[in-house]
Image (tube, rainbow, N blue to C red):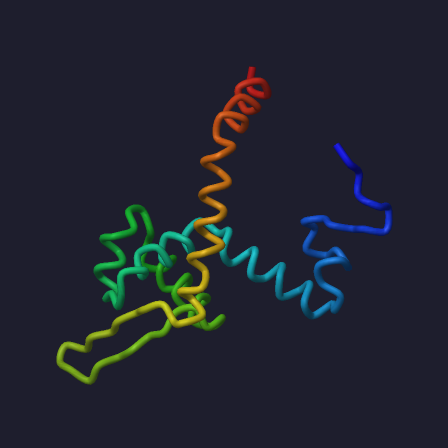
Amino acid sequence: MTALPAETDFTLDPDSDALCREPSSRALVRDVFSLTSDKWSMSVIRALNAGPVRFTHLMVDIPGISHRMLTRTLRALERDGLVSRTSYPESPPRVEYELTTLGTTLSEPVRAFIDWTQRHRSEIEASRARFDS
């Protein structure tokens, strides 16, 4: 294996100066990592991948999520511009959620993460078995 020169600092640490030179960038990277690594965000994004979905359908599509957690997750994703909320003036009121253009760009890194996990599944499982024994 060839070692990288000492001045090359390629780390996955979100606080690394090699990845994020500005403190505000480091904070944003930390925020996005936190948002996308919580228990529900990726499930919500996956459920919205096919197009606009009503809140009640999301509750059905995401087993185990509570009304409160779905509301909080949707609001966080909406705040960051990944999900849009459309309210229709009907009786009863109808609200739909969908991925924004920015939200749909998450599919590529999510697929990359899933691919990486699948490629290294046996190594991860073997490591867990060694650790747990």
